[in-house]
Structures are given as structure tokens and as C-alpha cells.
Image (cartoon, rainbow, N blue to C red):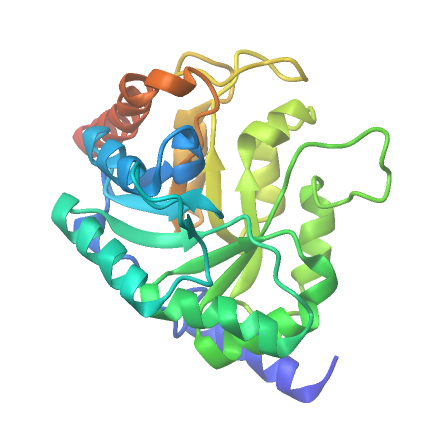
Length: 289
């Protein structure tokens, strides 16, 4: 381990996992959690429509997806190559609906520093809390960028691929070991729905990654294993209440992105109930003290 990396880790440990990174403010939280939508939940719609639907769910934050059409009338793709004029329009749309952009992904981050810097510059312009990627081969570049831009980065975890043993990011143990000696702003985007597909109980995965959680893609499922669709929080076996309790124990400050991959054309009512579950769970915890 080199000296600069060691100093970065020690500084993060001393100051806390939020060291240097702009925290997500209280007014962008529901029940103390920065709960909102992954725009991919609305991938049959435009980004502007996704922002509108996010507001309708009672959410306060959004995590951008990559390549979503900008508006119903405009085929322009929304990504990190957006012009300053387009970025200004998106910011205006977010402000109109009271939604805060906090994350972006899953985006490929190249090892080439100049190309990676384009993505981090975009994140800085948008005031994002973090980026989500699976580009583990670019870890050295990512570490340099998170220090330069003071923006976090979480490695996303799709489900296990039995026919591709080289795909390892599904395993929270792998991500834990990958980032343990790296800057404290690098960690995991825990997709607890994909964990359930892989046979991992969400709470078990969260405990493995304790202290290294940057963000979550939150899903509930009827059962562990493949072939299960997303369901409203509290109606499945993902123990979302237990997940929230574990996140509180870890003093998690990142965003919870509801990535609801069911009822694609009319998911707002389901997602609103998921947000309501978080609000109600939090109120119940406060009332029980």
C-alpha cells in the first residue's frame, strides 16, 4: 500500500465515512433516509417524466440512469456528455418538482483519466453525492478521481452469473476485499434485489459491507432465488424493516434508490407505497423510543 493511499484511509477513518463529501441534506430525506427513485424504474419514459413521477411517489431524490431520453419530445440522450445548456434545463426541471439529484449509474468509468474526468466533472456540475459503476478494472483511476473531485463511487452488484465465473462483483465479500485498502469514499452500491436473486439475504450482505456502503438499489422480493419479481416493501422476504435498522446501526448517509422493475407502465402507486413503508417504519421507530 502506498503512503498517500494509507493517509487517505486513515483520514477517512478518523473523520468518518462522510469525510469531505457533501452530505445529502435533511430536507432531501424521508424518515431520515435519502429515499428516492432510480430513473431506470421509469425506463419506458423520458428523464423529465421520470422526475415528474419521482415527485408523485413522495420521494425527495433521484439517481440518474445512463442514456435515458431527455423528454417526450426530444430524443437527446441524457448522460455525462450533456451540454451545459442541457444540464441547466435538467436542474431547472429538478427544482420545479422539488427533487434532488444524488447519484448516476450504472456508468462505465474508463481507466483513461481524461475520459474518467468527463464523468466526474458531470457529477460535480450536477452536485451529485456519488457515482455507481462496475468498472473494477479502473479502480486506480477511480481512486484518483474521488480524491480530486471529492465525490464517492460505489461498485454496483448485479446478480450472480453461473455461466460466467469471471463476473465477481455480485459477491459482497469480493467488493469488501476489493476496496478495503482504498480511499474511504470508494465502496459498494448494494443492489439488495440482485443479492436476493443470488441467494444472499440483504441484511447479511449489508453486514459484510459495513462501513463501505455508498448507496443502495432497494428492492423487495417474494423469495430468494431467480425468477422473482419486485414487490412492494414489506410484502416480500427481503426484511426491508431489518435493512433500514441495519443502515441506521451503520449510520449510513447515502441514498436509497428504489429500482422497481415491475409494473413498468404504472409503477408509481407501487413505488409510492415503498416510500410510505420507509416513512411509516421511521415514524414507528421514533414513536417506540
